[in-house]
Length: 302
Image 1 (cartoon, one colour):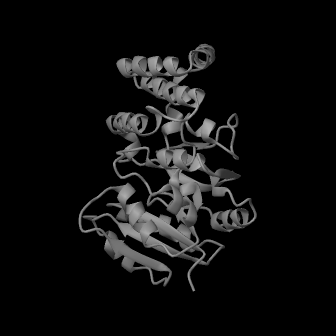
Image 2 (tube, one colour):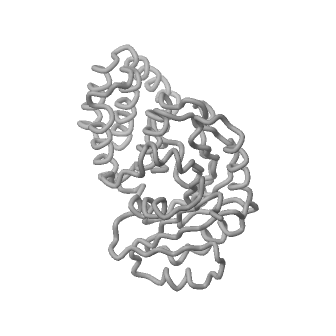
């Protein structure tokens, strides 16, 4: 009999911290799952660490060449046999009831709900914060929220395999933001459900891809061409996306990029852009533009 959930865990040269992530999956109160560990051609002793586990629910797949985390997740999805797909990152930790609460939720929602996600604590050194901003729309038809940035990282997702079969897998052409791009596609066709409590601990590592801003801007350019140039989406949604790109560019001091995306936002929907700009300016006077809703905090999980 196939498992209810397939958990996909991509890893690359994380042997020193991998055990914590694997243990947090194996110690779930919900036990009807398989754990597919996809080793993206690690050069450390990752394979030896996996060999220390005797749990029959573990499947180990190793890429012959390094293809990136996005491709590793897709390898896991292709080999998954469960009705639902969950993702764990090799440097993160699930709380014990995560899968139980997500599976219960997904079994009791409308058929057009394709994804349920949870909150999480994010750790940057000694700093700990809860991840889901209180001021955003958290569930339902979320396209208008998701285009302003992703607050749904892979490690908090539980998604139906049928949904992935319909919208496609992670886009391997993206150097970053693969999870954001996937959720943009998903939210055009499915509702999203939220369990608004922290069920994952996310640890930002010194070698995290989130520190690569050049990859970030390449990803933004790719997504703009793929989804928002000549798009059938509403002009307001297109404007929201480009304003998000403007705000992130500003926060990273990429002024030319910022000006370019601000013009794109204005062309799509002038009034919407002006309203957002005024809102952001007022926020800046009381705080810091870089912590705005339309800014890089929203990209932190991608």
